[in-house]
Image 1 (cartoon, rainbow, N blue to C red):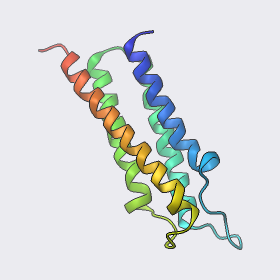
Image 2 (spheres, one colour; image 1 turned 180 degrees about the horizontal axis):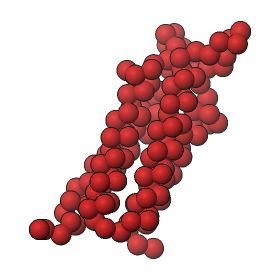
Image 3 (cartoon, one colour; image 1 turned 180 degrees about the vertical axis):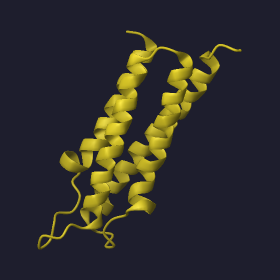
Image 4 (cartoon, one colour; image 1 turned 90 degrees about the vertical axis):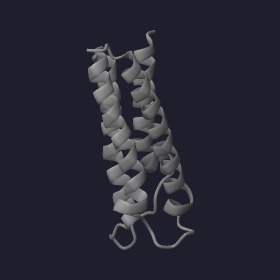
Length: 134
């Protein structure tokens, strides 16, 4: 297995974990009287961002040009920023600190976002060094 395939597979797995984690592994708060709390919408947005990261990881598997891989990896890095921003600044969650979203889901999503950021930053440096000079 080539290095770039391993890189793509790791990104795909991180993306799937971001997308499916709040839905199945570390659930956010349930609906109350038919109304959904903010954390529900944060989890939905994280599902989209996780699927985007997984799709970009799939593209890393499909394209072998170093410039293309660099561009895809920059997109993954920016996705990681949004993954961290959704629960903390963009949408948020429940205001009570003892709720499930604040105790479990958001810290895990933050850690996943940091891992995605750090890993993609390392890949950006790697692909920048690998890129043929003009």
